[in-house]
Length: 436
Image (cartoon, rainbow, N blue to C red; front, top):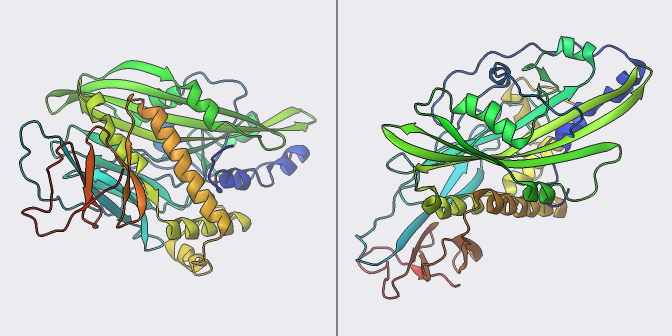
């Protein structure tokens, strides 16, 4: 598929390995692991293990969807939070528009030990979450989930864990693998379209029991699905991509809030002729699972900040490089499950810090795909403005309509509509103008 990261199908490769040979001979599958216990309640973001999802009754599913697995980190338990120190600010003059952003950096403390990703967040917003290594899926050994919350707590961006799932029409195998169990690192679950994943999986897992909860709108995004599904499919594989958005409302600390939940579902269906008929192996992934929350009526006005946070998100190239190498090692060795972090660290010593051109290209494609998805899912009707940071020597995107911007070279940015405003005045920091 166009703009797909290099590792997007590695989990599919591993999960499919050897299955077609067994299907043609109708040999029994190896014993399936039992359902996992429910994940304990956690702070923001809430964590959902696959067995927890199994308690949610799935809706009616399509007979023959497609499926796809991804090596983008998926995420589970929040990592140690990285909190941005607020930038000192002065009260704005009447009529002056001023927006401040600061670079947030998250270090992968459990695994590789270096910065995993960074992004720009509004001044004073709190970041929690990061990279964890649940080691359930060799094609996706690391997970990603985090929240960024405004000082008042009502405005929030949340990134949910990616779902990697498996399904089949093999009744004998399904007797051993009930819904919610794990098969080669993927949850056993019938495929669902994007809006159904949001309605029947994400909402029950992460928004259960909210006061005044109601679903306002469920909207499919076929245009985004077509863009994500572009390109030639793998031989013998039927692809299928859906995307969608769900608008919900509920009460939070006595005030009404509204929230958009977004998702893209990529599927691959592989069929194998057998004496008993066509055998289907369906691998599917629900990714780009975002949530944007604001007080009721204020979601549109905050969408620029959400866009800045998501479109400025960057995996560190060295981290992405070593993670890619590690994933390929695990897939090549067909490792079904890694029991301890020490095993991962031994494999990491086999990786190299040298970045190949293929890895660099995959990293850039991941950024391009991310910007495409964010632009479609936020659907705010606004465009961000591009600025050039002469200190970092890179282009960044900040809210439009301010006119000028500044940076102090420490990952902090200010945009304003006041041509006479200079953040260096009265400050012990030197601020450099950004170029449009």
